[in-house]
Image (cartoon, rainbow, N blue to C red; front, side, top):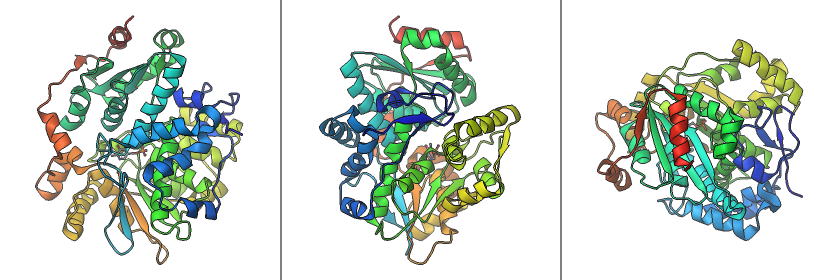
Amino acid sequence: MSIRYISTRGGVPQADFRTVLFAGLAPDGGLFVPDSWPSFTPDELRSLRGLSYPETVLAVMRPFVGDAMTEAELEGVIARAYAPFRHAATAPLRQLGPDLWLLELFHGPTFAFKDFAMQLLGGLFEHFLARSGETITIVGATSGDTGAAALAAFAGKRGVRIAILHPHGRVSDIQRRQMTTLMDANVLNLALEGTFDDCQAIVKAMLGDRALADELHLAAVNSINWVRIVAQTAYYIHAALRLGGPDRAPVFVVPTGNFGNVYAGWVATRMGLPIERLVVASNTNDILPVFFREGRYARSGVTPTLSPSMDIQVASNFERLLFELCDRDGDRLRELMAGFADEGTLSVGHNRLARAREGFGAAAVSEAETLAEIEDTLARTGEIVCPHTAVGLHVARRTQAPAGAPVIALATAHPAKFGDAVERAIGRAPVLPPALAGLVEGEERYDILGVDAAQVVERVRALAGG
Ligand SMILES: *Cc1c(COP(=O)(O)O)cnc(C)c1O
């Protein structure tokens, strides 16, 4: 009765929940997806109304976990994952206009929505590793938010060591301090004198080196991890039910980088939740809006923006949607992706594009519009929003929704994490919440290295005690 997982590229035998939890890419280079979609009837959805946030997560995760954990085990992991959140509602909705709502996803330990998935992953890893007695070493590269969330979730956890690479001088002070002030013995922070892509390339090479990966028991918790996705699906369902779902279908507007968050919303639709439309909001790195307009997905250089967590060249989770547009034909998808790897571009035909557009809208937002939106939102509502959230709000205010349909814009980070951008928009930086203000004092621990894979490996080996 458990759901099994298949690869988007069709080249792996079915995998179970535990395998998918610890996997980055599937062995054939594809991404794991469930072989079928567990789905709620409208009555079942109505019966979830009024559940607490952790109860909703349990209902959503349960079928995906299957018999890999007992109900009580999963419930315990979920309770511990969301206990550190600073808001009693975990993911509160704030009304900004007659039909406009902000879904605040920044009340977790590191003040960005990545905590929703990462906190749960921390508990799930600990659970399965305690049972097997194994110790693993997580390696990751970050441009800021992911590394902080991963470290907050895994620092001090038994059975896990974690090494995070970030580009030296290219993450904000707050983001760096969130990572480097952790003093747990299982944590290693490396600042590389290079770019995020340099960090990423070294991590990919390490994970791809079979001998090294086996020796150090390497694992990844990157944005393509299936369990991270489905953990995020819960807040779409929770928010929609709060605003009259499944009897009213909301529009969700999602500040998008790697397409993980908005794809989690699409998973909610597969599970039976009526959603009017999922709108991808991008900054000037507009590979996705171009796709939804023209059916052409084309790589180009990354432009740094005020919303750095969305500065991406290729949206890694987008392959999961392409797989569905290819009617789950792994061979066809593999051809498309091979063409993309060679030529940096792929196209889908008229019919597939029309299908993609049934569920999704997309728009790109300029830097000037982002700054103006922060200023406008403050003037209209008294709220200060982060630049990523502003990108979404700008699109949300221009979205045509059927009468009475709530428009829910996702607030992906706390404005204090991006004080410089906020200050440019409104002339002052947001007040630091106490948990962030405390960081400014804390002692930091990290090593600065050149872009040198051998040195990184040496440090990670030392962390792993070998
Ligand atoms: C990661 C991140 C995003 C982009 O989310 P994806 O799942 O990569 O699309 C948007 N905003 C913030 C603040 C983030 O940290």
